Length: 536
Image 1 (cartoon, one colour):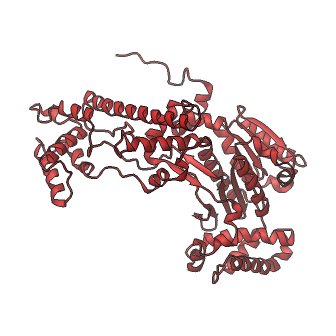
Image 2 (cartoon, rainbow, N blue to C red):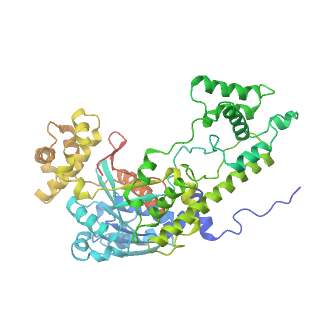
Image 3 (cartoon, helix red, strand yellow):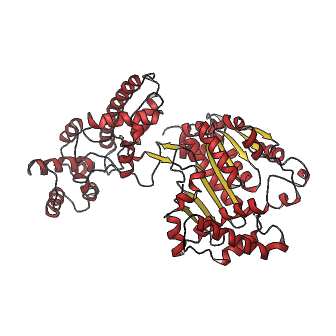
């Protein structure tokens, strides 16, 4: 019996032990990306504090809080990062200190200043940050912030909590994702078009062996390649097309079985469609391949250089196919059979990566860039995930919120059909900012004015939808009453949800893994629902 070794964590670095669980999700390179993230939080009320707390626990490199407020008694009821001893002190200082206690490896800084003042008079202050999280800010301030972020290439997340509702919006020019990690991955076994080395391996396996145990453990991919090749040879080299031809291929597979319960043959029959239906190039990937940005110049990001190299590979070595990712699914097989087959796929994947890398070096040189400036490991990761690349472009906030954009929009359909109450909340959250700009306060903040504010907010909301060309759109009175009843309160229960969503999206942006929000997310705590409205 082999002697048991030390626990897996015995010699791991401290950081690896600390972040062990999340490393299993986004890997060491994802954690390194978080560590390199410099996050700026504007306003550290409960929404901002909850968001930043999650990021600090996740291991971002540093954060800066910008908030001029002093801790008030109201803060004690909705913000867990201040206490009675904090009353009268700088809210930014108190929250910053307690957050750093949660993770001493994260550098903390605070600025006792109004975010609006910095936006107006010191825009360069924001240049050092990777990501800005702006909470509880007005529409006009956010538009200015968005403009300066885009000029400096800074990612921006806006978030708001308003009573039992809230919103989250991402804004940046372009977000490119290599590791989108879809829920359902497609196997690319090339049953429909096996390469020479795969055919050689398959032909070296005796699928008609007399040894029943061996017969029951031949990998299904081997069975499919061999029998599909035999079928194609008997039918002029083409793949099955009609239902009858497909049924015939299935019968050829069934005829090679020795026993009824041979698992490898069951797997082969379940995957036989791969012989005539290879993994298709998605509409999304086709759009990326056809994107104007794939015409590379000296200013092109590495992502688009690799896309250009991918196109060259598909035109040449790939013969229309994407690079092989080298992964094969579990199969009922002997271990040595499986490993040998796996090595065939991995060898082909490595050859494809080398070919894409060669194209990338040539393209970089032609563009006047350093030929080997893209690490080989990055190209390898790109090739492995080429089938699931994502590119998201966001409209500027000012453009989304302009009247011209709303003309004929999806918002009109949703409001007119009463299909989504969350679309009404979207309109009302914009309306409360217009209300504040007019009356210098939010609706419902004074109990004595609630009834009057309901009528005022309704007038503002009706004017807003009319200006946007949303003729016939109705804003229910009960929603308007609820918004006024909230009195611009920042409830902790709602802030915790919004803050959690913000942190999740921030991690997606910083690690460039998973697909971030592509619209404006509305959270409705009244009905416990969320909707992502496609307006960004």
